[in-house]
Image (cartoon, rainbow over all chains, first blue to last red; front, side, top):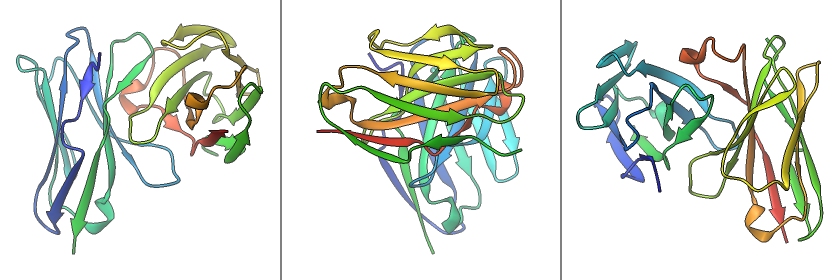
Length: 111
Length: 116
């Protein structure tokens, strides 16, 4: 039973436009949500997080939105750059010291 | 900060053998977690150690075991290897058991294990 799902395995966006990556979850006990970026042959790199008591968190070009009633979160990247091309993972933490990851979305930003 | 380093980067083992993967965490990071990432999937939590004691475990059998040492290094041991154990194994560390996870874990680059 997948508690965190990323339903789009891939996304292609033109440079300068907005990238929107989506994530759904089922466990209402999750307290925090995080986004990681992963390049080939490297470990995941932390991007941005959001607490379950907030609905938005912004850091530069990256904004994460949380809709608790829909159990849905999204990552917006504006403007998208070719260097953003990577696999993005959504992860959730229930304060039990364990991260539950989604399956990832491969983002391709075309010049 | 020196980051999280894992060794070896690649490894090929035969079914039934045992393997030990190693991780060196950042100085001061006394919490370390191990994850298994199968091809095309997200990482799955194996277990976590805090101050050299296991304090969390995912849905993995007992043949997956670990150790954490006072010098911020740790090991993942897998006995009786199966073909399905072929995956990327990631080590992640952070400072403290409850602090700072807004900033997430720092992950190593992983060890790619192939079981034949």
